Length: 360
Image (cartoon, rainbow, N blue to C red; front, side):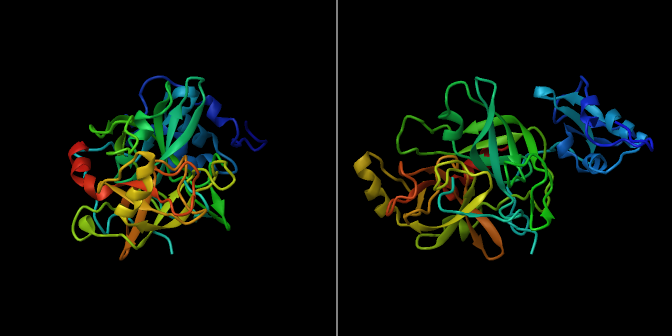
């Protein structure tokens, strides 16, 4: 709608953004001839800056409307966002100092993170048979094109569920726009379409011990890095690749079930002790499970654990100035935070070759 000065007031502008044509993630050209990628408006900061102004001029309104390139599922408008580019060549794993950085100065018993803390944490979104959507697993961003998650988040989900997108840059799920904390506001989270999912070929959801619980999700386009979206380092090289982390502390982060038995709306973190594998295996053996060196165990303090909903999320440690992903949330005791029963994580260092060989 226009105010009495003839300026457009934000509110119903998106209703006008309908179109047919390109698919999400495809290259496009905006109204002034600049190359870009077809994405949702919320992912295009330059256009979002215009849309967020108190008043919008007719020229600005026409520019946004002329930038439309497609309509996504559910009727969401897509716009041609200049400056974004599709991936070129094979994706690679990043190394310090280009990963695991925090650029600003399933969690049980955890504390809320800051807006820019652990900017590699991701959420996996599912479409359910009833038409509803939900976030039910986590992941970790490892470069501009991939997240790594747990295989059981792909192959052990309820019948009819489908992975439809990955969200990065999120903090508070109860807020559909920018997340703000202590008068600081983060960028709007980014939703990325999925072009391919690779589950470890030796993962079997019927095996209780959940060996090889790892998968890769490839986006349909590159994601741009920012203060709130950054990749984490993987233990590609020595000494990190063979580092013995037993007896040290690691941090897990996610939106999983809390001590109130409900999923958290905000990203939480919890510090956990990495425990001896032999001792961990002896704890699980009476339940018919055995733990291998391709797995890690962490936790065991009452009330401090990862929990349902954190699956696929990161277990990480800071090494010097950079965070490294050492574990992926796999499984744990039925009652999260049970004293003397650590959770079990996929040992990422054992799967570096698999990850590198399966990226395109």
